[in-house]
Length: 320
Image (cartoon, rainbow, N blue to C red; front, side, top):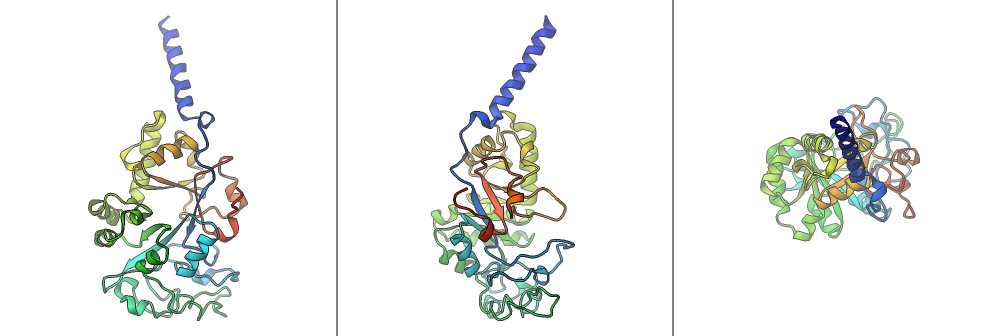
């Protein structure tokens, strides 16, 4: 008798967990997916054999467009192509500003020299950000001369697109960068701050949270903490502190292991002011967007959450 009671109890528990997490019993999370355009519209490049130290401007495919990543034209075109969010990279300058640029040093993409953060904004904004791009090993440089004075400041971006949503990535692990960015963002309106999220190294994000806890933020350790804790404790809808007021990039081969994926999970995260974007399968080569129909096929049918893409100009279809 006791064994039978335990058996029915176990079956009942399993049914409860299934009902609590099955998307069969929930409405679609949203009417359509939300698109995040990585660095705006930019030059595509091969990912084969690249490392964190590779100069990707040296490995582009023959250009189909003249847009250059992390510039105002590239950001504007991404929004015209259907992006809901654009993410871009920032560095502090030696004269108290923030510049929007990907690389730690200037030599790869530009005609400048030195460490980006050791320069003045005035100097950086004289450079040609298209100078170093080549599709043929350096025989030709098709974007040279097309990126002169196109490196924007953070202020330029936020003033140019005051009603748009962004994910700002701090390109360092310096805690002072988090503190200083918090000081800069505090000057914005509450509406603008609500449209911003910040990602970066563990130390700057910790400092940012201490100085501006209202802004959504994410670091490598915080996202790992969130997903691991949720996988252990989230079967009945509990959302750990690490998953609140943050940004989650969920690989397509990790999502199915999360309780309630996709619709229940997305709804739970929305309630705690957390953005969720699906990215390509977890792999050693770093984070990669969903960039073609084959990539999108990895998502659950009728998925309406966030999608990170490197190819917003070719993949987004407003009908789907």
